[in-house]
Amino acid sequence: MRLRHKPNAIPEMEENEYVFFDGGRYKGKWQEVFGNNRPIELEIGAGRGDFICKKALANPATNFLALEMNTNAFVVASRKILDNKLTNVRGLIGKAEDLEDIFSNGDISKIYLNFSTPWPKKRHHKRRLSHKRFLDRYINIIKDQAILELKTDNEDFFDASIEYFEDFNMDILEIDRDLAYEKSISSEYEDKFRKRGMPIYYVRAKFNKGDVNEE
Image (cartoon, rainbow, N blue to C red):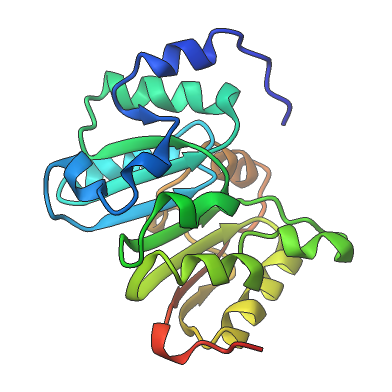
C-alpha cells in the first residue's frame, strides 16, 4: 500500500514526547524511559499502530516499543499513542538493522512481527525479518527464553519462517494456519486480509540464548 507523503509528519512527531528518533541514546536505559521495571515488548514494523495501541490498552502493566521506518505511516500511530494517553508505549523511528545500536542485551522480553514484507524472491530472502540474519540481531537484545510472535497472510513466508526458527534452535510453541479473529489483536492489514476471506497464519516461538546454532 503506497502512503501519501505527509510533509509535516517528522516535525509533528518531533513534538511528540512519546516518539524517539534517536533511540541509540537510550540503549540500556529503556526502563528509565518508561519509569518502571516492567517487561518491554517490541513490535518491529508497527505501521499505523493499530496492533501496538490495542495491545497496550489491553495490557497496562507491560511496556511496549513500536519500531517503524516509514514516517508517513507512523505519524498516524503517534497520534493514537498521544490521543489515548498510552504512557506504556513509545514509538521508535528506525530500522531493524539498527536494533543492536538501540538496545542492550536483555532489554526486550517479546518481539512481534505482524505482516512483515514477505520478500518472495529467493535473492531477497535475507531481508525477511524472520530470517537468521535478523534472528542473530534479536538474540543480542532479548532476555533468555523471550517469545517471538509472527502473523502473516503469506503461507510460503510463514513456512519458511518456521524453518528459520527451528534452524535457530527455537522452540515452536504454537502454530495456527487459520487464526480465529477472537484470538487475535488485529492491525489494519489483518482486518483487510480477513475481509478478503484470507487465512491468517500465526506462530509463537521461544528463543534459547544458550543453544543457538552458529552455522
